[in-house]
Image (cartoon, rainbow, N blue to C red; front, side, top):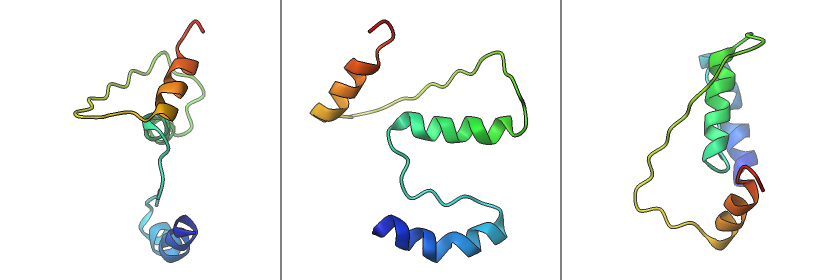
Length: 75
């Protein structure tokens, strides 16, 4: 409900300003995906993209640890 209200309130002003309103980003990969999509614009291919994140004092929940274990390359 909060997300819908945020989008309702800021949709028109954001469009006029040419910016995106993103009330929820999911896990850290969601933000990286948004940045890459924005930067690539209309490019069809790219050789590589490297994204590094520094996290300080982060304590993942059990659900996050399950997702990390499930998404490890090679599993």
